[in-house]
Length: 330
Image (cartoon, rainbow, N blue to C red; front, side):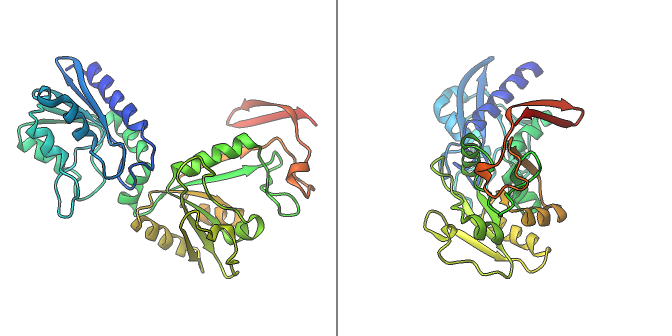
């Protein structure tokens, strides 16, 4: 098989894995598999749901006896057997099916598996080949899985909504709504994709958010990083829409302990929604991995109500070096 063919089939396997909703298989990784024989794709598979067949098993079932002599392109090292494992090991299944070659970009982050799946295949006479040039893409598909197992904490995505003058709330403290309905819908979809969502006490007291996906998907685990202030039992974050965990943070170092505890519960991705005090604490501790900023054309300085704040009409956005220039008339 040529390198160009290998590249094409690995990319196809990555595309199959990317079609699976991130939380459909959590806390396990999304994986895609393509079986190729004589230059032709004979079967494909993906790990579609938690507890369901792994990608390799799904593809092998579709291929049947035709899998003998084929090459399997898998987005992650095929799993190996270990004590307590609930599903059959894919490395053994591939070898038993007579697959002659397996190409995968990344080793499994699970220390019980990492390197052992590839070693089993080689002992069974299967050519197990790494495609490291695709490792970054494969790991990005499962950033929470790799973060949880390698670093012992979730991947943290900081999300904020700001006005053009850099405000996250009006002068009155109100932040509903800085952005418009389409942006809020995008946030709801983001909530459905991540395992957990976190806010501080100030956000609970000021906005009483539900912290749900609002129908965009499965609601995330709700996390409140609280200080000394009391949280009202009637707050919507304590309703029965989704589970809620409260961490009493007495000092910045406690944040790492809380993240470690969340990882132990299987949380791989955490959406850090607010407010600014919590954002600052995470940034200062070096615990933010990614940021998503929604910029509204409003000017909130001096406004008591975000919905009545002046806004730019038909704003124009221009890139100036690493900065952005926003213009418009009021």
